[in-house]
Image 1: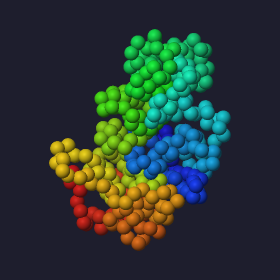
Image 2: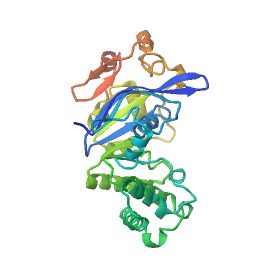
Image 3: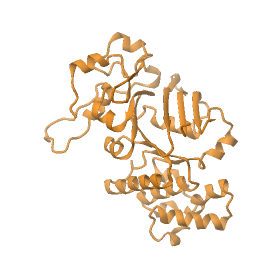
Image 4: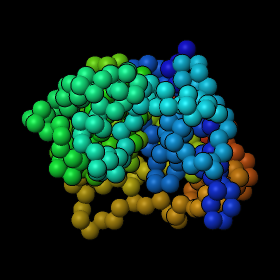
Length: 329
């Protein structure tokens, strides 16, 4: 049995223009020790998908489908029961460490809180465990900084503290929601290396959300490409990178800066702009922005097609795309 099974997940939100479907039938599974990357433009549904795993959606959100953790259904689970899973069996590293940490509480209290809530440790025991966690994630002179506040740490150190909090109870699943967005390149690499080493050491499953295709290529075994709340392509990372069967996946790759390219050249772009949730077509979410768009793309949801390389694609025009162009390795 997989550690995590997500089947036909649908999330509806209330917007100023009425109800909208923010996630439209996402399905994936994750084994223990496996790593999965989710990639896509801002607003495509990445963060809200993983927030649903944590039970952190707005109270007005409507959730359909199934989310199973070790066979236990999480959709519709009472908040009291969800609190026993959140921070205990599922840990999360949030995108912005300054807003993820409480500015009026010390680091010792914040890192130790999940240990006291889920493991029943005393204040003294939790403080000792917190010190060990801070040392493990590389906070210098951790013993003298336990009683410091978040504003007394750099951005990279705050992110390390967020990692310590997420790992405190040894979760089965770790979710990292763009954990390096606000950090410089050198610190990004240190944080990503730290996450990878700890995941491997503790045998956790990992879901990594990132805009950076290079990060995805070097960090995860499988990847899922999202657009407009839908999965458009998924599979082993190497297979998706090599084939890039969906037009949206190709657009993301084409838009990457190329080292050594002439300064006078312009970056490739995906034409148009991301539509609002209420304006998404009933069929393929990418219809209209795709140069291969046909009338059926607006009304017919593409079926899931499996490629010989072992990855899945949702597109009605796969044969036409394959016939017109070949993607270099």
